[in-house]
Length: 282
Figure 1: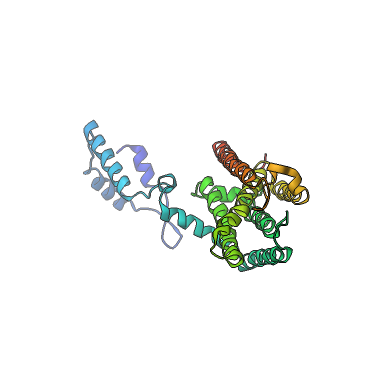
Figure 2: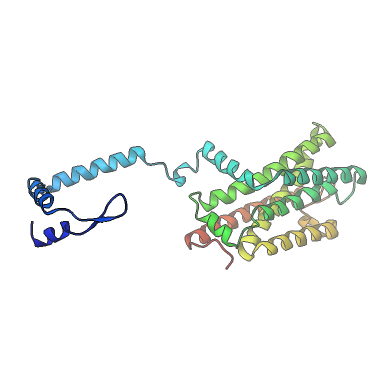
């Protein structure tokens, strides 16, 4: 022990009661004599390597899997989706179902052969607005906080988008069964509103991620209005067409291609924002 060690042991220390006390000289000498008996040899390179290997093995046994490693596990994906259900109150589910029922009633009242089928227009618009509602915190400090959580941005966006599309599709399918029954026309009718629903949801989300929440809402309403007022004059671009339209097959194929393109754009946008470390409006 050198003089510096002696001075260090003489420094005041806090007792449990909060008062300052010093070590008596007799106890200090006894403590120094006791500590001098214990020496530690410098570890060799082999011992250091063995210690590091043991730490690594212990880490691998106890460390929790990273989120990226769990992305393909069904239970993990279901937990992510379930965690986002708390964002929606019961009034949201009830209002969505009520609007879809009203669309079905209007569809029945309009009869067959109409170029504009109300339910085909109701389901996509409602789903698009639901997507904007689910991501209403985008561009705010709250969304920045959400991005700091362990869940990857892709999984968070996928979870909320899945909730909106699944709920509206399930209600729409039940109402379609009530309207058409389990006959051959059911699949055509479901496909008629399911394609524009997918296009509307993805378009609203992508525009929102690029330009903000209000831009997503505005774009959804504009596209929906153009489809409503121009309907058959759009020809093959009439994505909201019913099965009686002459360009029904062509319009639905174009709609499927739009879904694939919008999905690719969404994936690219999320990857770019995540890689840049920013999930906010530029």
